[in-house]
Image (cartoon, rainbow, N blue to C red; front, side, top):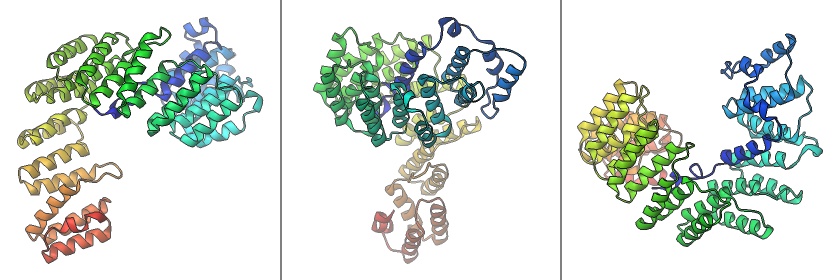
Length: 484
């Protein structure tokens, strides 16, 4: 399994790190009674889910009706809306607090507002807002919020500059800033810089928490540093202050699997399974577990986990994708087809990512008719084929020597391809050689024009290719593929 599948998403993302900081800090800004109850003003605005509808008129109306609202209530409502990803409405309340109610914002209010501005308007407006914050209010919470925005944007230089400000101001006393910067390094592949930050923390006596060690563990896994993985796992297991969960063992297991150490992979996978009881993220845990057991050729375990998964959780698309892809590692198409039928009966939204695994398998094994039938079946149910769907068919048609169909499928792939996507040179070459061999100058011209319009080839390349076909020269694509 590619390490990109686990990233820090199944480890510790910027969002997760910042949310933990947010939760602990916010606990000091409100009373527990406010936190437990649903305030009347929240009941008024919570049904207004459309972000295009401003809630400011409803807040103004609330005051005009003579009703009161405390600072604590407003902060509580803002946090609730943030939690439910209603960022625009949360930002409106934050701004209403200071602009209309003239409430003096605390540093934590400012930190939250910066995060909301980033979600709603982007990084430039965050920077503009930060530059206008009075210096006496720029405490560690505010700088952490700015660092979090740069981390989410993967802006390495700016994140490093903020981290240096935290050091210079004496705010770099806990792991939060280091964790956010490590996350940036992880997402940008700067593995060696993670180790440098770890050394700095240890020299300063800053406790390396689960987030810190997970970042270092991911770096070791990405670099195939098996000794490093061994040491970090042992360190985490021996430190009672470190909270272990399935994500840690998932990172370690995938690191071992990457280099083919199946015994160690299996040992970590068993520990992952032991830590799967936590309700948060358990779907992701089961998905990882299925793929890891498949990667270590443990077919009985795959079946056992699938039965447990269905018993304990609602299975979503990614769960079906994990199971189907796992079964296909054992070439068990029959059971994969049955799982796909379960998916079809459980959904009304037909995401082609799920059947794509079987479509690919059919095409690779020469079952092109079954692939066509499955594509048409999901199409009739309202699914929209992806670029990969058509590209699997292209390869299937090429293997079956159905070149005209391959050309048509390639056109459909190009129509739905994301920016900067291009089909493989070998596929294009085969299609063009087919047109060349048939001396189909008109068809080749139409195909060239189509590829040019869709941004696959430049005009000059298309003209050269068509010229080669018209002249009947062999191996045309190979001679100019460097320009593609």
